Image 1 (spheres, rainbow, N blue to C red):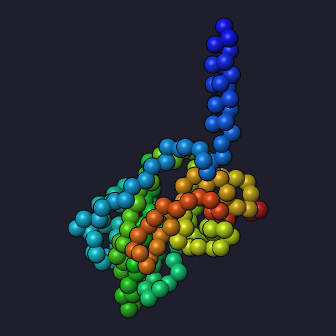
Image 2 (tube, rainbow, N blue to C red; image 1 turned 90 degrees about the vertical axis):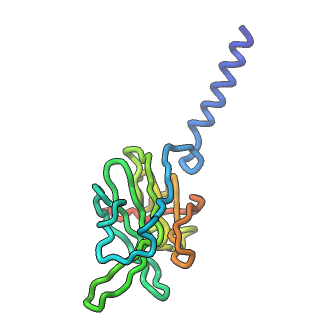
Image 3 (cartoon, rainbow, N blue to C red; image 1 turned 135 degrees about the vertical axis):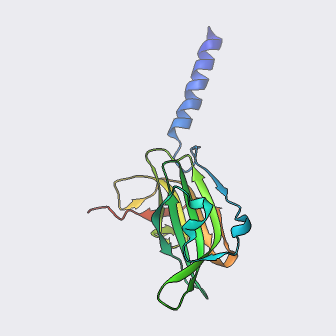
Length: 177
């Protein structure tokens, strides 16, 4: 009987610690992978949604990244199941429009109903960084701090990298509206 009591108390302590974990350390089902560009690598297009990656996806917007010698754009496409985050390099057409080249592309899966993607208004240690995007849990606050995963689009390195969520937050654009 003492053995069962010991096992019960041990399991109670272990499960209590798991439930008390913060989102930064709690395991989630969020998965991501880099999509190989194959024959699309270095293709310049007036309309990148013509590429097969974007079939059945909705364009949810994007944000212009800190310009270097060219302009770079981080775009978000999704449907009910997947999210694509695209790092693009922009080239002016001379008529006020742009052509673009996909530099890097990642697919994000496994978001729960209370998890969303934020980009364009995120910071690391209170320093704004337009290249940072995250999966967060909605909070009715000025900033989202329950960050599950974070990435950074790095034009100089021509890729998107996963980063540590510590110190990452995003402005809640709808707060107080």
